[in-house]
Length: 429
Ligand code: PA5
Image 1 (cartoon, helix red, strand yellow):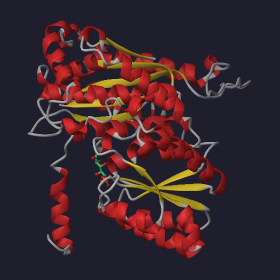
Image 2: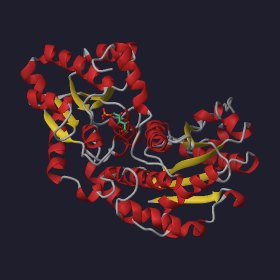
Image 3: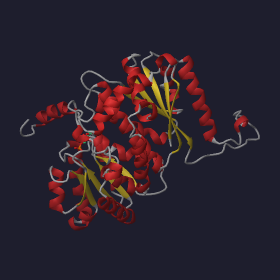
Image 4: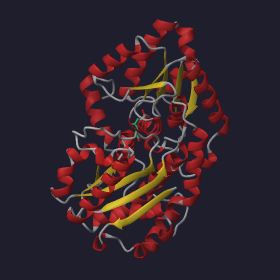
C-alpha cells in the first residue's frame, strides 16, 4: 500500500488542498469523460480492468517458452517503449538478478560503441529479441532491430530466428507491423489510445517483465487496486491527486523549478528514469513545467547531497521509501574493531539505511529548507509496483491538466528528428 506523507513540507509551502476542491473535481471529470486535450490517449486509465486477457495469456505462454529456450532477451525500443520494462525489471529483480532471462537493452541509442559492445556480448549468448515500437519508424529502434535481426538470422537461420523474435507495435499500421506480418513474427498490440510513456502495463512492459520471470498477474492486480483507489474526485481522499497538486503548488506558487525523485535503493535508478520521462515529456510544454531530476541515496548524498543541503533553493524532493528491503545483510562483529564499526555490529544494513533516511529527511527539510514529499511503501513487490506505476500515471495526468498542458503529446520531440532526417538525406526531408 502507498502512503503519501506531507509532514516534511513546511506549512507555508503546503497547499490548502481543500481550496482546490472544485478545480480538481472539474479536471477529474474531464479525465473520466475524456473531454480534455489529448483525451484520445486515455486508454491506460481503465486498462488494468479492460486489457485483452487472450493476449495477456499469449504473452505469458511465449515468455515461458523464451525463458525455457533462451538465456537472454534483447529488448529493442526507446523512450516509453523500453523505460517502463527496464524500471520494473530492475525494481523487482535487482541489479544482479538470480531469476529470469538476462535482459539487455538496445534500440535506445545511436551510440555506436555501446551497440558494438552489445553485439559482441551477444556472440556468446543464446538470445531472443523483443522489438517494441508504436510508430514502427523510430530510427534508433529500427536501425538496431535491422542489425539484431540479421545477426540472429545468420546464427540460427531464418526459420529458427522467426521463433525467437516477437514485436510489440500498432495493431495495423507502421513499418514494424508490416515487417512482422511479412516475416510471421508473434506480435502484441500497443493500443491506439495508449501513448509510449503510459504503456508499461500493456504488452510493451508486460512481455519483457514476464521474460524476467516477474509475476505479471500480480503487477496488473496492483494496478487495478490503484485504479479503483485513485478513481476519486475528492482531493481530500485521493493521494495521487494530492501529490499532483502539491508539486503544482510548489512550482507555481513557491517558485520551485526542479523536483528530485529520491530513493534509497540502487535498483530504483531506472524507475527514476521512467518517472522522469513520464513527467517531463508530459508536462514540458508552452515554456512551463518543473524539471525532474533524480538521485539514489545514500550513493548520491556523496555527490549531489551537498547541493541539495546548501546550494540554490531551486528544488524539492519526492522520496520513495520502502520499509522492508527484498534482501538484507548483517554487519559482522570484529574483535579488533579497527574500523570502529562495532557499535553497529549485529545490525542489518537496512537498519543503517533507514537511519540514513531519517537523518537525511530532517537535514534536508529542516536546516536545508528543501520541501520533502514522502511516498512510503511497506515493501516492493510486483503488486505494489503495479500500484506505484498507476499512482504516478494518474498523478501525472492531473498535474499536467493543472498546469494547463496536454499530458499526452510530445510535439517538441519531433524537431530534432526532422533536422536529423534532413541531414541524413531521408527522402521527403
Ligand atoms: O512516450 C512516448 O510517446 C515516447 O517516448 C515513445 O515511446 C518513443 O519515442 C518511442 O516511440 P515508438 O514506440 O513509436 O518507437
